[in-house]
Amino acid sequence: MSNAQAASEHPGFVEGGVLKVCTAGDFPPMQYYKNPGDADLVGFEVDVVNAIAKRWGAKTEFVVGDFKGLLPSLDSKRCDLVASGIMITPARLEKYDGVPYSALTWCCSCRAPMSRPRLRKTWTERSWRSRRARHTRR
Figure 1 (tube, one colour):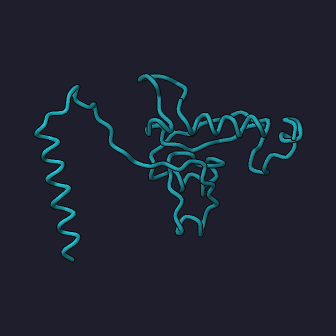
Figure 2: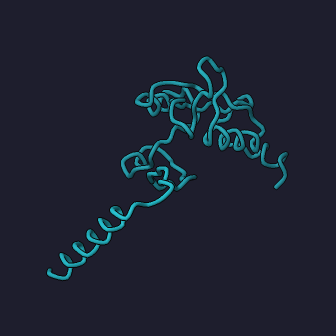
């Protein structure tokens, strides 16, 4: 499908070549202001929404507000869609359409020490033996 075909097949809620997107604008790396006082948002969701708008032949207009007010803003037609790290839940799907576009896994990273002390290894080995012994007793 060419961009011209995609633009002619944009959804009815995209009016006047503008896609209005409600977002909180404070959830890095999804959407945030790179520097205080910046006018333009950056982030993963900003890139995704801009690509969708381009495909539909529209420009993106971000409507920044409090996270709790995003869905009510959608209800009042203040915006056409919400992109703000919002979870798709069964309760939300009863009232809104949702499209999963990202699968995230939470993790914790830390800097590893240059050398691992023997004490840590001993503690880990002892801890593993203890856990294994507890599981075999059940």
